[in-house]
Image (tube, rainbow, N blue to C red):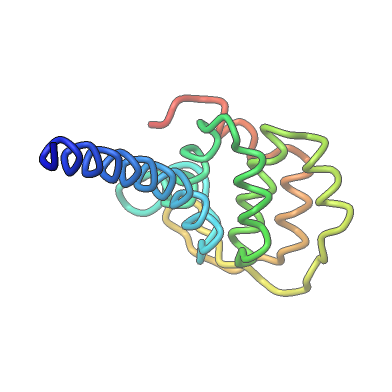
Amino acid sequence: MKTLSVTLIMGIMLSQADISLAATSENSAARDLAAAKSFAFGGVGVAGLMSEGERNLRAVLERPDASRQLQAALTHATPAGELYILVGLRRCDRAAYQKILASLPRPNSDVEVARGCMISREPFRQLLSQIQDGQFDDYLSGPPW
């Protein structure tokens, strides 16, 4: 009887651990997105690879609770992370995007941006305007390359 009880308790504990690990991996893409140091879409670098930020954004957007995850991540996001989050919200929850956009401070600071093989610093406000104009929408419309 003790063996059955111990086995049952261990099974419950392991299943709870699996749930916790799944939730952690789901949230890790949003957490990593919020911590982004640079903003980049499309192929970047000599090899033309997808940026880590775009990869994390795509992972979050695949989740049924993408809007909630993005909004939660916004509270601790870097400027580059904020930009990614706004692109994602524009894509999955236009009402939340509009609401956040209206209340978001627009700093004068520059953000590191990678475009192809070029890395530069661009004004946050300019990038925000490009997001509003939908200039990054097409990157998320196609399959990852």
